[in-house]
Image (cartoon, rainbow, N blue to C red; front, side, top):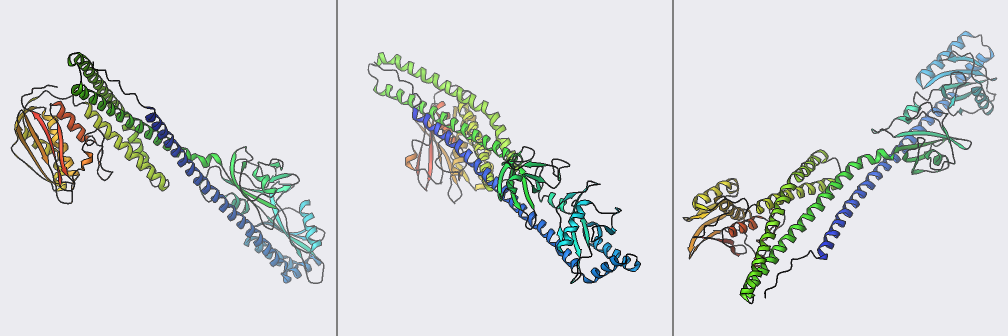
Length: 587
């Protein structure tokens, strides 16, 4: 009694392979994204350090220049003598005019908004650029310090008592050799003129980056410049040093270099902190993490899309491979039943059931292949279009790895689309074929050659043929068989131009057609694999998806024939296929 073949179940090892492949794809995508993220963040941090070094150098040089100017004025003995003479006799008009002219020259040639000449008691005697009758208490205290010490005093930034504006000052004692200072020059600077713009400028376009100038005041970190994201903060915004996550507090407490923290707005930031040499100031350059990571979100979406495409491609490839395994299994079972079946009469019904199950299974598989390939074309076409759009828009804007990754994804989508188109054609051989009718095979060959006109001209191929017979067949499908075999002869050629010869010989009840070429040939070990669907023997140097010969075999088998080949590596290949003479099979 013949036994009914048990359908193949997908073995666990296949599921494990697919699972591991999926995990590998996801892990590779994740590691690539993390690598890109780390590289991008490192570049941002390097930029912050470079900007910090630049700002520290600019501010330190600015202070040195002001102190150098003050030393020049301090050493001006001629003007010190004029000022002492004026202090001794304020009614001397000529000396008064000389001093005012000199003070005006100093003010106009440098960054000073106001200049006062103050006597030894701290009272303003002359002024340039100001209408005030006297200087404020804060300034008087600093003047007294400079007069008593006999040295230049560079004040910190302070807010004036009357106008509430921000100033910082240079106080230069008027000093002659072997005498006490007769007064002092108070040179007032407006930080909005140069210092604050210097701090606030940023070398690249950014919507959140800024530079902060900080000083310690008791147990607080005091912001001494106007901030980008909050107004009226200079000398008024302060935070306790106990807020250790605050970059400003880190700078005051001795932190130097790169750090991460929460800024005055409560935003997570990357920051670089340092101290300004020769001053009580500290500097913080920072940028929001949200801005840094924003460009990476586009990369993340791209990586995710590529991962999905690769997983779908892998799953579809395994499904198609398993379908082929089932087809081979049922074919082998059928051949065994025919060859070795015992008790023929009893086994006949079982064989018929097996054949019916095979037919139904093939029909279901063909329907699955048709539906899968047909329904997948539209989303895959959209995926391919978006990948091509991404390639055009971002090519050259990301790094080399990203460009190569996008190119691989575009190539994979295009090849998957070609595979689905081929699968659709493969599934339609039996369902969309035309009824067999009398056709002239010479005309069929002519149509196939016409379809390959461009490839023939570009390769310099020569196609010859014997006189071909009239047979009953599907003309469109026979054109496809001849066209695929000649196209392979052109594709897999040697350096010499392809030479293709088509002939047909009548043997008993069938015509044996042959297509001979002088190409690279086929190794004997591929004899049983070459007609399998999606079976490719070569790499990317030869285009295609490996469905052409599978399609030829399916068409020939639909006509009741068979197909095989004879080949010698490096000398060419001859493909043979048969078409029965008397059979009048319809689709």
